[in-house]
Length: 72
Image (cartoon, rainbow, N blue to C red; front, side):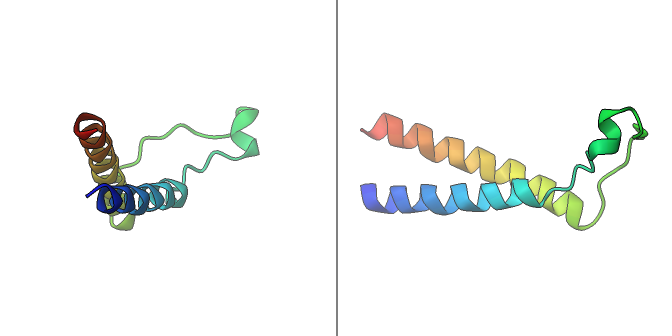
């Protein structure tokens, strides 16, 4: 059971890292010097899917981590 849980945690962590890295913030060098306009934009399409999947993966990772902590 420990091997399966460890494998699940590794898979979830890799997917979580990828989903975080795929999110585009648009924070370039121009925003450092005040060139970026702070306009609120709603998430649509793939951005919304990526955001929701990141939240779900984070919850799953925390859940498996707590389960691993309680089990041992």
